[in-house]
Image (cartoon, rainbow, N blue to C red):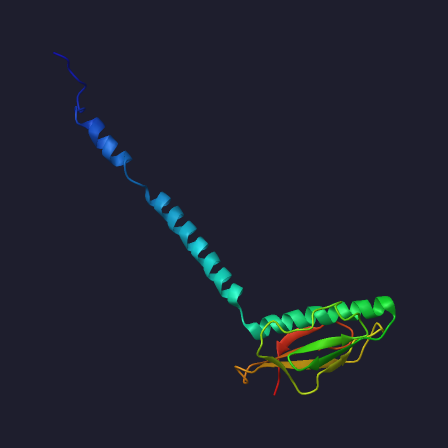
Length: 157
């Protein structure tokens, strides 16, 4: 009859197998952390994908104004941005050189909608205020001091 060492029992290997079948606290924390980071990334992506239509139009306009300003300096020809009904145009550039429509249908220009973009390297301080027909209390200002690029900020009353 086989004997075993003192303190050992034939049921020990089964107990070890049961313990090995679970997860450690550290493994659970790592999984929960990964899920939290992935959820936060998805939440930010979904929020930014929709975005505020007025904000998108303002950021796009700032980029377009800088592009027109650079083209004016390169060609030596004056370029003016003029807002119109449902869109805008760049006078002094080819008609299809840059987009001429807002991304959102309800984007409008409040007040004067004319900017002079060059060809001088330093232009005067200029700004245009964008508003939304659906949300008239929401306004954004696209402006430059004449030296730095156009930036988007909150319109001051």
